Image (cartoon, rainbow, N blue to C red; front, side, top):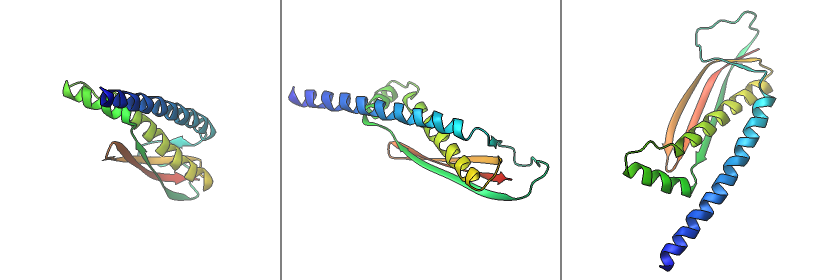
Length: 138
């Protein structure tokens, strides 16, 4: 009985602090997306914008871990063959963060557009690593 109570307290605590951290991260993502919205992003590789002065390779990388509460929920959902929707927010946050990091690098180099943006993803023990790369042009 006590072990079950301890487990319940730990899962509830994990849910609270995980949700709090996720809300804070989403808020900072929205603020940063507004800051870098002037940089155009395209996944087209062969697009040739007119008036290119200089181009550089930009890379953004992020590793985001899943909180314990969502891991427990995902384990229960997978037992019943359900979609693991708890991982969708993790992937969305990671993708948005990695695009922002690439945009920040492009902005620091004085570029106005990012072309040929590609993503690579790897699952890392309860989390996800995403790498984005593309060509930033001035």
